[in-house]
Amino acid sequence: MKLQRLQPHQNDELARLIHTSLDTWHRTRLNSDRFGTAWEPFRTTVEVYESLDPGCCVVAMDDAGALIGSAFFHPRETHVGVGVVSVHPSAFGCGVGRALMEEIIRIAGDQPLRLVSSAMNLDSFSLYTRLGFVPQVTLQAVTLDVPADGLPGASTRMRAATIADVPAIADFELRLNGVRKEQDYRFFAENKTDGWRLAVIEKADGALAGFLAASTHASGPQLGQGVAEDEATMQALVHEMLDRHFRGKHVVWLLPVGCSGLVRQAYAWGTRNRETHLFSVLGEAPPMHGITLPTFLPESG
Image 1 (cartoon, rainbow, N blue to C red):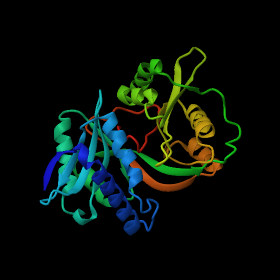
Image 2: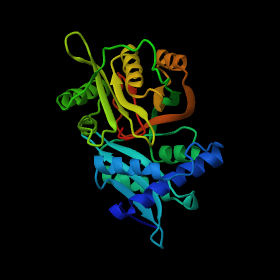
Image 3: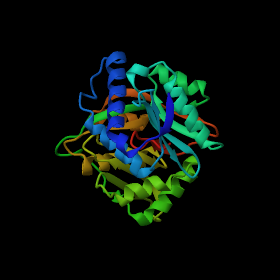
């Protein structure tokens, strides 16, 4: 096995690998075919990560030069986020995932690492906890088929964020959660592919009360990243984002299970649970005071 950085000519091979890894695990362990047979939608994952953090993907190759594993990472001001980690089914249980993670830990040096992983995948859970990651928050992935005529009662407090809002958004998250990811929010606000939405809600004095990003990519509409001072603000952001941008769409997002009011409201809208996840940290884990919605795309902690 050889580790190296992803090369541009490997992008489609990596998209196939990510699809095969996820599809095989969900079919064999959860009896679910939700990823279907098409690998092409996973081009979006590779393209997004490579656009956001060029060159920040470690791949594992077998002796024949085929990809058997991959792991994205996201260097940020306060930490390193770990993105999608995938292993080819032919290499399950062969130490590929551990080798990839040990390389990212080496790259991160003294910086903390942060990731979101499936709580239902005991293989990945064991890998991360053996490496020293400590779960901080339990999350439920929920899905919703947003009605074509929208969700009734959406507020009008939300406005679209601009590039000028980005430093304040990053500082807001730093104040509440102790992490800073200005690169992510600049990427969303620039919206060069028209696949992103970024919105804010402000208080009467103009200070931020919360923000929420969303991916409108056809490969998988989803909400996140987002942080708010309280559940009511996050509920208003989710409500308005769904009503404004996702009418008639199937949407997924992550909810902290401890936010009981937000969870109850999601059920009232008609959400269904898809999977449970854990947000985990290796190294320093600042207290999280805000209501935080992580995301699968991009998973930057």
